[in-house]
Image (cartoon, rainbow, N blue to C red; front, side):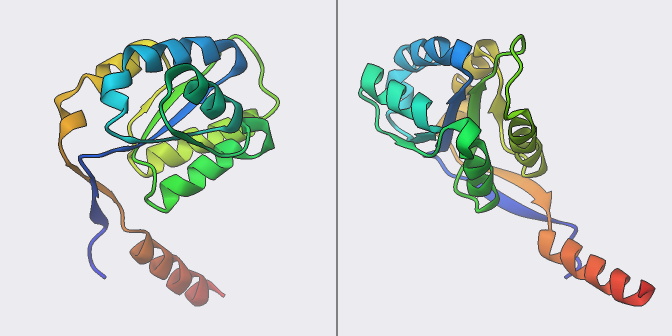
Length: 160
């Protein structure tokens, strides 16, 4: 194991997570309506209430996980780790404190660690979804976690 990074591929059909804080749900639903034709070519999932509301308003099939405060953000993060989410649209509300803020920060962190595109507002979401990369596969390099774990285990043994 000598490679520090491994190459992962985001396929042509993206696995997109859709998340919104309560004050931003209407904005995300409107964005989904405006981008319905693009979104219908991808697999969609989201946190509980948001997923349900998007499906009801747009007819797009959105697989729902738990509501954010009930662990949905962590479920989305776990799916990123498993390689089952390629792209995150998260309309967050910067003006309202969220009781599950540590979960939100963990989700944002794991998206960064796994080099996953993430939009936190409409402008960024518009730029991402209109990118030519939405219609093609994309290779990106992430930390070789197997090597990292092996090196940490060896180091801990040597220091014990």
